[in-house]
Image (cartoon, rainbow over all chains, first blue to last red; front, top):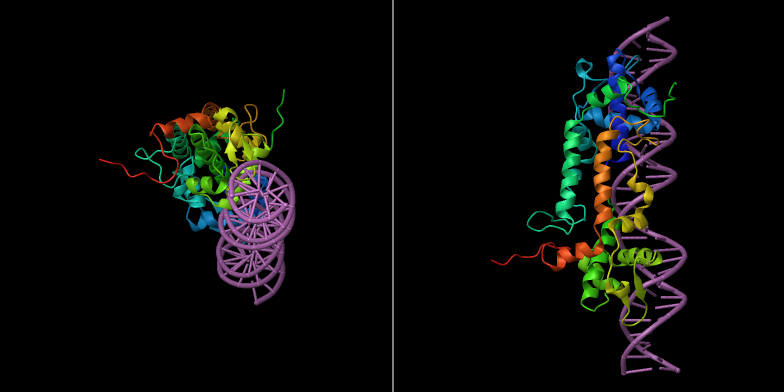
Length: 149
Length: 149
DNA sequence: TTATATAAGGATAAAAAGGTCTTTATATAA
DNA sequence: TTATATAAAGACCTTTTTATCCTTATATAA
């Protein structure tokens, strides 16, 4: 449903947002460590994201990644579309090339609901909303955090 | 969400069910053609399914695939579990290794609902229910059927 | 200006998923 | 018994996804 690369991308962007809120611009090694992804591969993914203008970057000493005005209203949909393409949202759960109300696969109507719920979710949630969940301590970005008593 | 191999498997099983209802036991070439999948690869998939006893087969002339008593109450869950493993049902949408109510990823609660709906769907639908949709003309198995006026 | 830290880019490699080919075992029919 | 049709099995190949390595461009700091 969501590829590993897209997962890395979303986690990375959430981390960039968190850093930006603190006036910082993380670089690839820092960000890769935080999201527990390979450094070089994370670099490639960030490259894809900046090439598609999902965020900005600065080269050179002190450089890093950041959002314009340090705020991201990117939906997960936009991230996933850049990483996997629009088609990934519309595929038949049964694998048929042609599958619609007129020529439904045997699973069409039931699967349609789930696909729509998913679509709605990624169109609603943004990097910012996810980052807020982390900032407020309601969610975690990577490894399990020890709970205090 | 569902791999191509699992899609082939489900489509093949539905076709076997339809044939069985007509007192026939399809072989690999026939079945592969019907579900529009590569013959040799279909053979491999059928091998996996019979090895896990999701259906029976007969070698030799006049052989083919069939369900005991010509009826299948296999859920899609069981097919998918054999093809992709139990883990595929429980993965975090965000890619976290540890993700649960105590240590939720930022998408945990919203994604949980979708994953549960999907789980419920594959636990409910069976090869037989899908085959019934095709037999009654409410759904198609493969290519688009021309509609008569 | 020079050293250094960074993102970008290109080539390659490793792993996983999807797919092919050839041989073997087994059942049926002539 | 022999020929033939079939599933099973094993080795291999191809494509896609994930990942690595090395070089280049660019910004900052000393």
